[in-house]
Length: 111
Image (cartoon, rainbow, N blue to C red):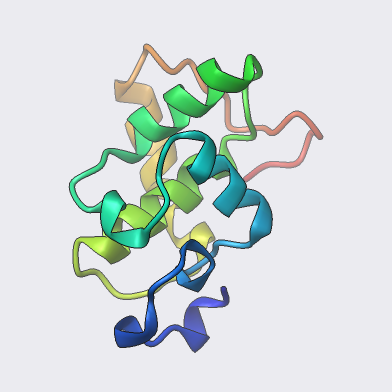
């Protein structure tokens, strides 16, 4: 959902979360997450790594940005567009060698 339209008190389903649509909701369900409350205390990088392992593919690094946005939101942060988290992801990726992310997606676009 568009972060500008989020009303925290109305977040009940995964698609009610900022930056989450049907595809991201399906990815979260694949990880066993059925409700937004299950994201409280979760690590965005671990979610990303688990998603890549479960699907057998390295997902676009921008998925980390979305996971950062929703875990931050569920910890009480404000709803922000996923790209607000790109700089944070890039800074953390340098310290997180196990992920080995580039800053380019498979399509060649920077994110």
